[in-house]
Structures are given as C-alpha cells and as structure tokens.
Image (cartoon, rainbow, N blue to C red; front, top):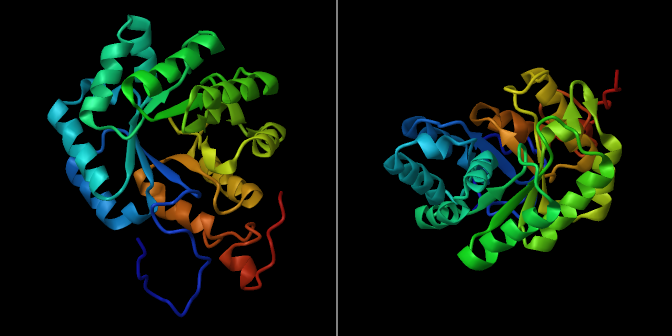
Length: 275
C-alpha cells in the first residue's frame, strides 16, 4: 500500500510501504475509545504497523469493545496483541490454557509472552512460548527484561536467545532495561544488533508512566535509536499522538539534524553535535 503525499516537490527520504518487514512502529493503546481509535487509524494508520492493547486492559474491557477495536485495526492492516502482564497474570493463576484459547478465538494477531513481574526459569518461559505456538497456533511476541531494569548483559542476551529458540516471531526489548534515567545501555544494544537480525527485535521506547521518564527523554531516545540504528529500526510504545513525530524523526525531518541519512543532513544542514 502506497500513498500520495502533499508537497511532492520537497523530497523526503522514502520508507518501505505497508505491510513493512522493517522499520515497524508499534502503537501502544491504553484503551483508546473506538471513535478516537477510528480517527487515529484513518489519519495515521499508514504509519502504524502494530497495536498493543496495554497491560490487563483487555481483561476489564467489554468483549464487544475488544472485538470492535480488533476489527478496526484489522481493517487497516495493523496487527494486534495484548499486554504481556496479562499473560503473566493468567500464568500465575493457572489459567494459561483458557487465556491462549480466548486470544485465538477473539482474533488477536499475536500474543505477547513477557516476564516483567514473573520470576520463572528460562526453561519455563521457553515451554510456555512453545505451547502457545504449537498447541494453540498462536503467533508469539516475546519480551525480554524487567520493569526494574535488573538483567545484566549476559542474562539479557540469553533470554533473547531462548525466546527465538522457542518460536517467538519477534521479541520486544523492555525499555527500562535499555534506557533508565538519563542512561542508554549502548554496549548492550550494540551486542543485540550484532547477534540478532534487526527485523526480528523491537526496541521499546520508555513510557511516561514509569519513574524518571518524560516526553523529552522519550523523544531523545527515539532520535538516538534512529541516528545509531537507522531509519528502519523497529520501535514500540509509540503513543497515538506521537505517530507523526516518530515518523518525522525516522526521516530526519523532526526538527534536529542528527540523523546521517535524514532529510536535513541530505539537504546540507550541518549535523548537530552531542552536548
């Protein structure tokens, strides 16, 4: 699917059209009302590849509303998943089988399997992912990392390896592990990029409900990721009102000139120096 934009005389770096295999943007859905969701998808759906109905929202939302929301996303070729914390809750309750069954019945595109709060072995995580894939026919999005950011580099990489071995299609990388306070774990990110296909990992951006995170820091992280890893880095946790800004940053036309392949540098602007 391609689109015709305005101002074609002012060229901007191009991106792969939907359905994209790289440069994926996942929008986080905190229970967007159906009307607002419809407007968001109609105006910016071309730049949304995935949508996650966050946390345990799908467990408290009327079933008919969940079905409406999934249908809206499906109609614009936006894949869907739920918050991994809801999977963790089902697992701890001993209700993982009925949870997987309902995820399939409702028509979610994928199920997220995380361990933000769970303290389980990698063997049990692998078993759960395999069960979702093999016994329930679900596409699994793994997630690696804790909300507290407590894994060292070796633990993080081993966890990522297990997710792929178990059959996860793609794996989210917990933002709080990679970006905490004003620090970015550049060495760990470099190791991930060196070891795993870029199209299979999705870097979560920090969400502002977490301690020490604000929109300014989130924007800084987004610009850093695009500068270091390129336009086609996969990004998650983009809010509905950040879709356009994120797309501008991807193309180096977001108000700063740090992106070496972005519009401003290509037009001759001097690259900004880090403070």
